[in-house]
Length: 401
Ligand SMILES: Cc1cc2nc3c(=O)[nH]c(=O)nc-3n(C[C@H](O)[C@H](O)[C@H](O)COP(=O)(O)OP(=O)(O)OC[C@H]3O[C@@H](n4cnc5c(N)ncnc54)[C@H](O)[C@@H]3O)c2cc1C
Image (tube, rainbow, N blue to C red; front, side):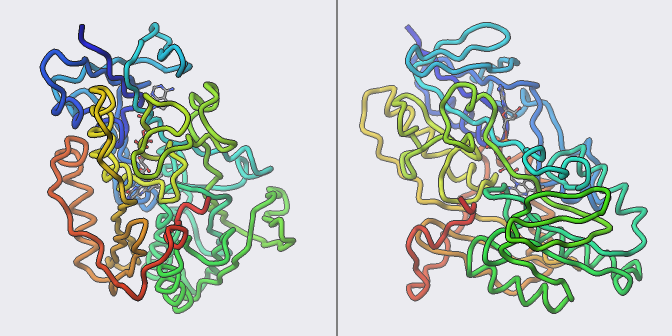
């Protein structure tokens, strides 16, 4: 009797994993079922450009169905609970039992965790927030801007820095930079979780007159006084506040008791199997792995999830190992970008920002819909090996957890 392989979540990780599994599964061996809440796939990296009025929101959202291999059955339903002992996903459309499950439910922002943040701060980590920020930026005539991160881990660590550098460039173009004071706050001892990237980006920010405040753990925002205060006791006034809210794992994960305090599922860093549940694999933001919460990480994890899940289903040894690979671009403003290419053992060494990387990122944003979710990207180059810079796995942490 065919068995059930269930993937929960139709974002980057879930769609790609479902497609790769469907391609490898033998005829009659198992049914591949993808459960997604609203049946739409959102390209979140585009939110950054929505905030600057450079992309239309409608271009970032498509139905999941056409992205799926014909052997994947899409079930549009909200998963409400996962019972890892009975091996059942309970949904608002009925229960689905599984032999193997992939959790690909991503993360969500939790602004309510910092008093005053929801009322007072802007961000661009959801479509609605990015559109609202775009409208605010259109009317911005100068003043004191405070940008940063209100908690770790947060997805796409480059994005808040990209926003700062792009805003600096946009204000210069509009002749508003000399009327604007820019401040960047980070809860970490540096502007970016990985030291080698901070070493490159910090001088760029300083050269553009962006004031940096490290060890700034946002404790509360006072919307009346327009001030943000840190746990460390620093208070910064602002005219425009753009703080990325704290992130949490999916509510489903929390409701099912599968996650840690942040809602991240303890996951084996190499096999990508859940540490406590033998027939459960985890991909993308949902893991507790010490790497970026990024589409790029989900992309490089998908091969391992597909291969090990099928090995487990067949009672074979799981031989595939994820090595912590991530590769993404970092926009530096003015139509330039650099590249972050790294894994557990090789921290990134971003090259000099250039127009080439900016155009590569722009091209990727276009071809995304026909390549990554279907697993059609050619194998990229390995991260450069620089023996002198090899670090411990902890040295490559960039999700800040
Ligand atoms: C502003 C911004 C810029 C970014 N830039 C980049 C970048 O340049 N490069 C990069 O690599 N990454 C970037 N990212 C991060 C990237 O988008 C995410 O890390 C990635 O989408 C995570 O993939 P995922 O599959 O884990 O989760 P998601 O893509 O978030 O998908 C989760 C899916 O699970 C579904 N789901 C959740 N709960 C349930 C439930 N209970 N039942 C059914 N379905 C459910 C959701 O509907 C969704 O479809 C950026 C993110 C943001 C916000």
